[in-house]
Image (cartoon, rainbow, N blue to C red; front, side, top):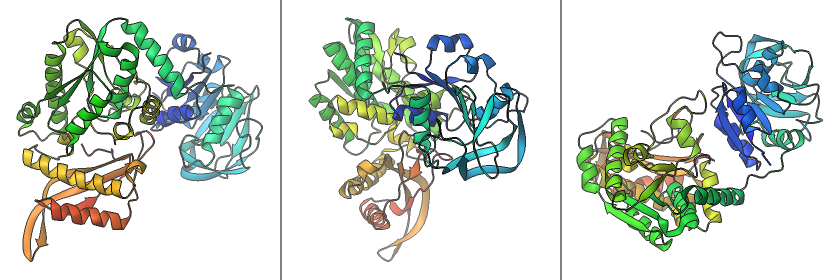
Length: 510
């Protein structure tokens, strides 16, 4: 039974969040661009469609539009913010620029709680983000919620198949947003909640076996949860026909390479480990630009990996731990989302080595990957490691890479993580790390003037890495971390804490 919810992306910063919230309800969601052809949508045969928001105005020339037949397929539609305004426009209503824009918290008053707002309080806090409003509803639609500023805060069609909200139910600031989405998915679209970690594992293993057969697969392991879960799925599916390659780039954290290799040995992976530190540092010498660092590391990794993979006779496939956010942030393949930065998955290898690509996790978010790994019995030491970028510490050193800077950063980072673990906070934080800043500041140590480097602490909370808030680490703990780093790491006399959110900042500094 197909329970796919199709999310059509009009460029909203929240599009990925919509897909994530749907999956939290146990229903599979997939994102496609707003201009996906009607024929392709018919082929997908979704259970329902959600139209995302957009920074555009519906009455602007060049604003994103859809084929009107898409919302006339006879399946439920939920239109959010811009999506609502587009629906009104398609059906002949009127949208105008509001004299009083709404950005942030608002309170809706519900006029009809029979379906979308079933069991929702008559007055509910929501999150608005719009400068336009509906002036006149099209024929066949009625208002089901309003605010003092928005006479039309939510609508539905008379046949109960099409709904629209001016607010964003997918963000946490909408207090009953999950319940509203639940009503749409289960009461209106009739979903049964078939998307589970168990169903994913079963399907992924079956598809790998069908694809690979008796072929051999090579997989690059980084020590992170993504590649570890990828390898575990493949091992379960094809056994010893999986060959794992771990490349130590010399850019790992404190004592990390040994811990990772020991963990993989315990999982009985068919493992090849390569120490290539000198090669990478030689290539990175004198390079400061972060994108150049990424490209150099990616290219050198390809060369090292290729050398090892070519030693495996008759290998046919390359497995990668690509995730959904990797796909979205690297290339706008599923909608008009902006490219943020290049990602580290080795995309050049299949063509260069004539390998077929396998990416079993490419439609999963990070927490779904962890749930899958837990189900497969992967130890928490590997599974609950904080995300670590492919280029490693190279992009946590602002400026040029040297052994001295790497060792300094490793020790500072080790102290930070050790203190978080001692305080029992490590697993409450999505990602924590140190950043080496190429600036020096004046200090006083032992009655002597110092002129040394700055370490920035970064710790964030998140569900999926698409959005993140800075972690509220207790001040006493931050003080202890700062004191230890300054006392124990030669060359550091100042520690600062990053309190930026994503967006507008990214989690990593480079």
